[in-house]
Amino acid sequence: MSILVTGGAGYIGSHTVLELQNAGYDVVVADNLSNSSRTSLERVRDITGKEITFYEADILDRDALRNIFAKEKITACIHFAGLKSVGESVAKPLEYYQNNIAGTLVLVDEMKRQGIKNIIFSSSATIYGDPAFVPITEECPKGICTNPYGWTKSMLEQILIDMQTADPEWNVIILRYFNPVGAHESGMIGEDPNGLPNNLMPFISQVAVGKLPELSVFGDDYDTPDGTGVRDYIHVVDLADGHVKALKKVSENVGLKIYNLGTGTGYSVLEMVKNFESVTGVKVPYAIKARRPGDIAACYANADKAKAELSWEAKFGIKEMCADAWNWQSKNPNGYGS
Ligand code: NAD
Ligand code: UD1
Image (cartoon, rainbow, N blue to C red; front, side):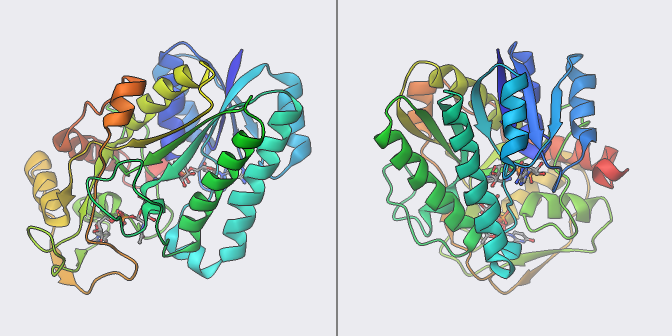
């Protein structure tokens, strides 16, 4: 009996594979390596000492999925595979809709054919748009997304909800991640963005390691305590653990469940810089710039539902997030390419 992890070679996927193995699960990974490398999984194997069955496979490829389902005894799928770059999705919307939406449709169709009706889906706080209120509960209405990437998450949530309504044998858990950061404490696996990082923490780390000259702080005139954007950063190992907890739940015939995975605490951009500097002792030069289009002032979770129903809550704080991001970045200045 194994768990299929699509996109398992990626940032969150590789950390989740590690936690799944630590929890005693056998793991099968399907990834087309479009935004990752085999090295991440080799390193997970080195950490856990357990083999991972890996298929270089695209979720759009029915034959490849059928081959996996024929060879492996899969009981549930954790579905990470997808394209995730906000800016790229604006430039290439059709590629994003094709890969993320069509890919998921093929995946769930093939799962259904095999009678495997347990899925955990990677959604995002981005589906709340400019949130109606903070802290954001799962009851907060879905909002207007500012980019095609966000819409793929919003639409896929609806597709999976409709699928589960039509066929209540499905167990669907939708996890809405807030802002994943950090890395495994070993510093052997972590986030390895392609080119210039879009997200704050990898940008800070790359400035700190000397790859980039300074951080641009996008706006200091928001309605937040110091004027810079506030987000709910969550340690990727906590996020991975959330998937292990969700996997236990999905096997209890839960039907449809939706959970926020965040810490419940928001930090501003300048607080992130200060914490990073104090934890690492490395200076992060920055300059205040114009707001980034599509950004919102504040976004942080109420994660009480995950605590009550999954017995999950984030264990790591901002210090560990910064220390572990730096440990990974300083040991692997060029990511998996180093
Ligand atoms: P990632 O790019 O590191 O991982 C995604 C993986 O999916 C990659 O290994 C990529 O090669 C693979 N992939 C993409 N398209 C595929 C396809 N058609 N077939 C097979 N494999 C494919 O990204 P991540 O940060 O680990 O994110 C994982 C999931 O979580 C994604 O669905 C992402 O949208 C979602 N998410 C991420 C964040 C974040 O900030 N990192 C926040 C919210 C939600
Ligand atoms: C972004 C995406 C969101 C996606 C999420 C994944 C946008 C508009 N939103 O969210 O769809 O789900 O990443 O984690 O891109 N910041 C800077 N300088 C930088 C980078 C970021 O000041 O170089 C600021 C931003 O303005 C924001 C905060 O840091 O206030 C966090 O930014 P980021 O890490 O990109 O995450 P989100 O904007 O929350």
